[in-house]
Amino acid sequence: MNQNPLFHNIEKKTGVKMNDVMRLANSFQHANFKDEATVRRLIKQVGRLANKPVRKETEDQIVHAIVNGSQSMDFNTIARMLDKK
Image (cartoon, rainbow, N blue to C red):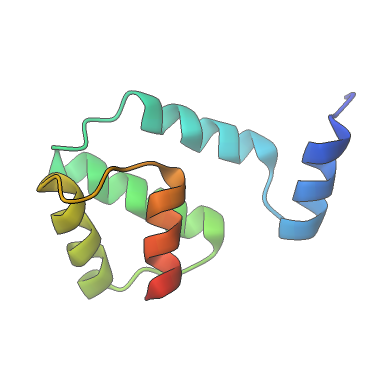
């Protein structure tokens, strides 16, 4: 497979497959961020992809921030929230 050198370097450095990142990004595009179950699923996916376990308390705080509209959401926002905890 002829892979983009940038993607290859990212995969090599992070250990995360770009196909997984793209799949997760696609799930964000059409996600209903007012639906708690959807938001929890996305948080868990980001945590798994980042290899960062998400404590229940942290997940609850992130879900509350997203569902109540106090944060605009995308992959980077959730990743930053996970890094803070």
